[in-house]
Length: 310
Image (tube, rainbow, N blue to C red; front, side):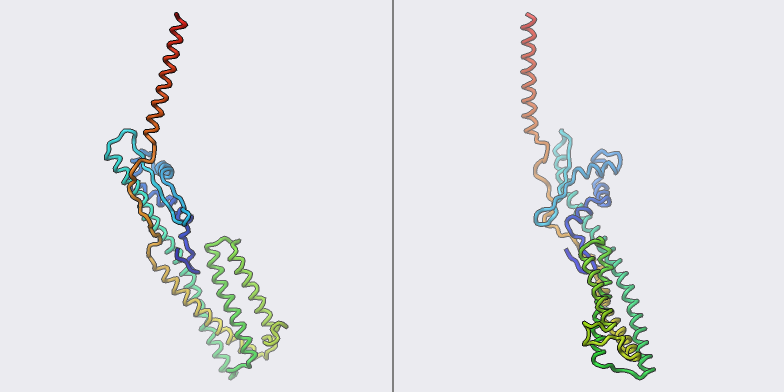
């Protein structure tokens, strides 16, 4: 499985089995091998039911998936039909895997397109916000001829910048996780708690909380200095977010364009060497014993009847 923050993996064995059982793949298999005729089914719905009963999926202890296909023949059939049925059982499994890979790649690509569109929108918006922030800072500095800050105020800006940048990045992560995970998932809960805590810290910083006594609250800075600090902070925040979104945007475009196989076949299906069922030797022996028993019972009954009649 391949995964990252933007593209949650869908290569979990259970997820892959769900895809294998999908109507899309089953219809492809039925049409590919003309199973409606093979099963003597009235329509594709009946063929799907029969195919469902004749294909098994199992997850091995190592996490790999094993697919088994059964193809039945009449009790009395020519040898070439039995041979073709053996090949058909293997071909069905191999085609299942082929279609699984194609559909899985398609689903990943669609998901990547959605993520890319979301990141692209945020990226373009942040570019615009950064330009606005830089222009506002330039206008303010030109108007008041103010270009420097005291060390403590600069430290406050740096701390606030880190807090707001983390909040913005966590919000992007939270939105993305909500697209693929349930609302009660532990990762979502943890991220929401982290955002809440960061907002508390930022509010304490803005208000000059006692715990941040070494860094003066912005409310205590003279009005012009405060405005300059916030303008500079805004530019720094937009720059930080821009760096993050640029990387994520490029990753999203790569994922969207990727069309590499997602399924690795360890053992392709081979033609079976012997029948799975029924066990004809057992049936012959059982039929012989039942017939023998019935004959004995018949002879005993006839003998008793003749004795009673005499």
